[in-house]
Image (cartoon, rainbow, N blue to C red; front, top):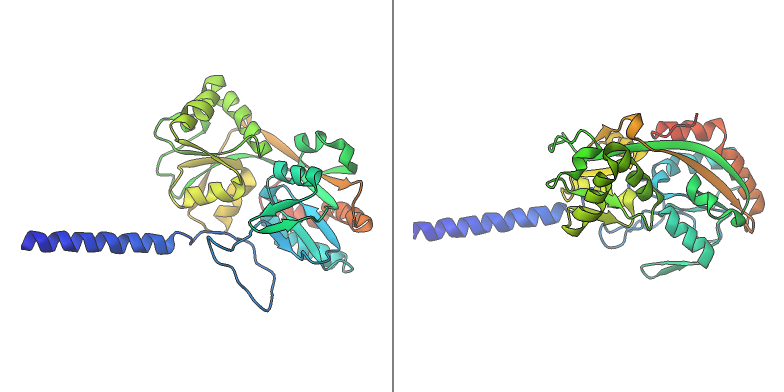
Length: 306
């Protein structure tokens, strides 16, 4: 009878522990920005939560498509822009992966869940490689910020990851952006080659992908931090600013820096659309992006502005 009671106690403890984990499984979910005020605030983690759509979707005076890893800048960026240009108070922005945003521009719409968006952007920002691929869409382009790579790890770095070479170890679970969706994926692959020759890239992107110790994300700037914080991955190569931000807001992550001879630099370029629906607003926002106020915001979140 005593053994039977012990078994029941163990089962009950396991169920209680499982319930506790389930109850906490959304504790680090976005949005990590501050949502705009409304009469009804209704965000349900894991169900109704749209962290990469910002602001006013109804009759906007300016529409900006940002490469997704700039999401942390948007609260400060939009507040400063509205202060500098008070004639624009209804602004809508998306911070999806740049490849997805490019497809949205070319196709004219995107559907997320049950929501279809047909707004045309006035300004599109992405890495220089991406904007260079679509010059026919822009009347003007302008570089405005810069970045580099880092490795995001769990708090305390329990796997003792010291650099990119360690990501090739069989026991290290890696969260990688899918190169088909995000330009950073190809840049990280270049860094793997710099750090350990082509064999390291192949190990991480082919061999480990087959045995599921490499996981390919579709929205790297959201999925990779969450996979690290929920213990699903041990390491995620990310833009420096993404790891910097998660540490800034005191999420349970740490950052491993990558030496310059193994690192890749990114240049962010803004493009004003030739068919921008709000042409003057687009021109004003392009000017704002290269202003001292905007550069200070980017530096605050770990970017560089030279």
